[in-house]
Length: 599
Image (cartoon, rainbow, N blue to C red; front, side):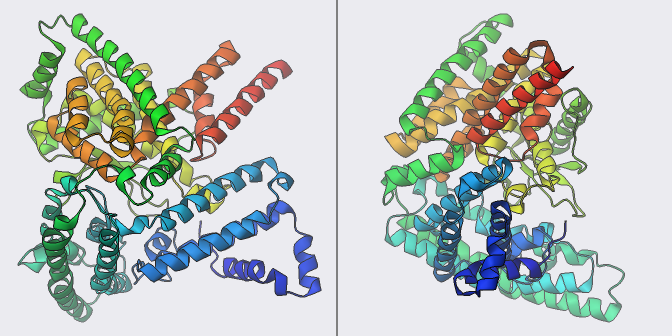
């Protein structure tokens, strides 16, 4: 869906100037329904997002600022905070009880988004603009793959963006320095090897740079003279602007930032740290549980899953302890691919096998395809084991299921079924691609991602694989339980680190003793939890809620329960907070009962 860029601007002006407008204009506005007035606010705020973030706007088909990078300066952040507060103030003028039931849900989600954004800006989250495995620098490195190149203008706009990298990096550095000054920085322990990713962008041969890749095959619409000028400019910009900036950034981290970072791990050590972490809990789980409550849920889940894992060890008649069985899984060559291609082919086979099972579990499937690709070499060493990378619906590329092929002896095949069902189908790709097709939703919902819902759904899909005919091998079943243990342990580790002072060693030990994850993967993941407070909580808490809702539906509907309709209903309204999901699924149950009575 293409956006009308003029209408939202006019809407914004109308909303902003209502107190100053004539009596006639005020009367016209008063004649609007509450739903209409709220929709006007949605549209104007959406336009503000497009104006604020050029890269995001590009993904939505708005190319007005295609040659720009986002302004991340302190002043721009303060301006965005002011704008966010203004939208919250306007939202407060609309009485939610006067809205239709659909718009009451929109109101609640919109308010939650604005409040989360306001609090993140007030906590100055932007002063740590990266995680252990990614960040502002990797976003720049991905520009060649996230930019569409069809005509001369596309290449020129791309180069214009690259010329802004020095300013973009300097703004982020200024923010990081401000964070250092107030004790708000990334913990030193997760920074090991961080600059390897930056230095991977350095090359003496500009034509071997990833930034030059788009120029190796230019469209035939570009004539020879234009081609020569374009290539000359590309070589100049990449070799004299981009590569030196990555080198300077690596030196900044090595000589200034990393030596000055904090040695403590937990978010509770930040300024206003306890409030900050509780905010992150709310943001990522959409619930109001405390760190202590979540920690206890995690311990309970760890114990339950451990018992199921021990039963498998008994079933395969392994002669040895739990620790010895884990050692056997981690070290036996039979469980590992010999080449990156073999790992990718196995992942692709599992994905295609699940494609064939989807009609048994859904009546609505997305039209967008997905690919199975390796994690880019430049970020693979510090990257997680797999990830889903979405694509706009009208893009010339598909969604992508990334599989990490770095260190093959640390990528066991017995967890590949779980990983694939989580990241591809019926997990992230199916959910996100369907979400983008919900044209009836306001844009702020259609293109948003609520972690507790999305990650909870993807983890639920791992267990759904049992019903779909996966995990026939006891080792892959043990691998599935290892992945579930991984997410249960996150509840313990994330709260342990960020609320109760756990060490990195404690966290690693919990996973090493209770899962068959490789030790390399465990360390990478623990560093991710340290660098990203709260996010790791969303998976298990979201999954538990969906399992609870399914059990409720099965109990109340009995023989009327249709797993396809249940899944359709879960995904029907896009990415939503768990409390709203519960209300909507209760409504689904009531509607199914009424249908049965009517028949």
